[in-house]
Image (tube, rainbow, N blue to C red; front, side):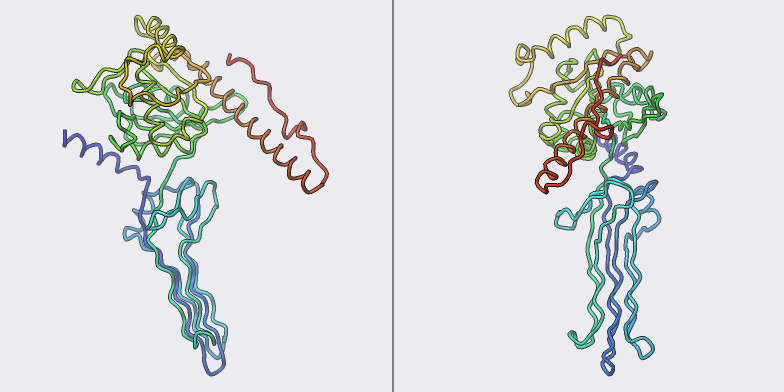
Length: 386
């Protein structure tokens, strides 16, 4: 068992979602007492979000993980005002949360070219400091990556998430008939005929107790936080991690996944969700699916299947329940259409909220108001998935 855990850790190490670095602002330059010259300010250290970057590239390129900005120039007769030291910019991936050594959040980088100052340069020597410069700020900084995607795949190991991702997108995750096939998050994009794209994150399979960090739970669950919606993927025939663990039916799987999300962060329960029921190509799958739907519609009638602490405070309400087979492709197109409609509906709701907020601000400032029913804020009519 220990050997298995070590193997998982080694493989997971190829994907990095957190990094600890040392940053130091440049020292200020010396002042010139005789002529009242002021030394240059030290350079600052910045973190800048760039596409195509990842934390492993940073670690490989800068193994010491030390980033020091340039010092300010000393004041001299030919240049009484010393030049500012060179800033140091660290390129990081989009989706980084920056925290200090005490765990205080400094800021987040949610789009390309967002930047955060992490270490200030020291002031140059001047009259107030007796022409002596100050040192630059030193800080230990933690970079924590949370994937940004429209859809996050959630499920126990071997539910078929990787197979599903390969069917709906051009991603090529590792696929095999054993648990924990996915050992690092995978990103794919669903492409539509009108060129609309929806990003999908395949997160490694959770296990019971993931909220307590079992099975690297926190490493995986945190990536769900920045997805707009959740796509639960369950095996219609249920799941059993090993011969030593309890078998769970498809209904029990849904309830326990919901409980893990609730215990990790209750806000996740507010995300719109879709349920994909996989492996419908196998014999007796339709009977199992009908049984699951009945249980989901009447969850209280089956509460006896769980311990009291396994039942979530709120049952997840799925916008759609789609029977499908990642193996044969059955139900894949219907699933893609439902995800598209769900994402579009969420975007329209966000636009409505924005327009109402704009209306309120304009009314308060007594400025002319732009009708939200104009093309920019027009709401799409949502029909059926097909």
